[in-house]
Length: 113
Image (cartoon, rainbow, N blue to C red):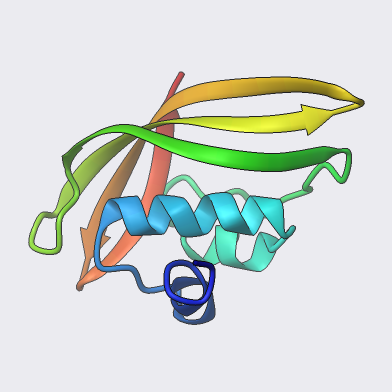
């Protein structure tokens, strides 16, 4: 699945939809690819650097919903739940992430808790 879903997006930074970008960003957290995360973060909200927590192991991403975010939209929202393990404990986080598409490239903007 990695080869057909996320690897091409991680290699190029270009995703056809906001959901595909979200999946690639989750994978980037799982494989500690801070470069992909920063490359796909919109310049208006992108941090100067990103320190990933090596103690967090990302396990699964469930897409719960989406508003727009298709190949011809200019913005979109992806709601998800991400499951992780940290310090031997399992947990999850839910979020509604906002995305924008500029010149046919999707970018993560920010999240609504």
